[in-house]
Image: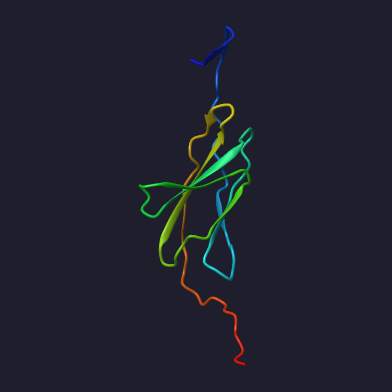
Amino acid sequence: MGKTTDGIVVTQVPLKSATNLQIMDATTTAYAIKLTWSVVEDAEVYVVSRSTDGTNWTDVETCTDTTYTDTNVVPELEYSYRIKAMAPEAGIKSSVSDIIKYTLTKRLLPFSKTEAT
């Protein structure tokens, strides 16, 4: 049953889940994983959750955009991500999105060369 406000019953419909979750090439200068996903109608914010074991999840960001770049990552470790759309003002949220997994590979990172004086 929904909320009653001034004698009117208001039924809250959950938001749709975020879809089209993708990993994009984030950067060539540092280790990072860039996520993108589709807009969810009526969502005010998106909560990005991350796991390294697929069981224990940590919310790493709450954002209003449909992209997030995770720079707190290390190579050779598999990361799993999921998104939850929310409309806190209305008190509604979606179920979590599908999970996407990614493992960074080690690579040589560019460095700045300093000239000796």
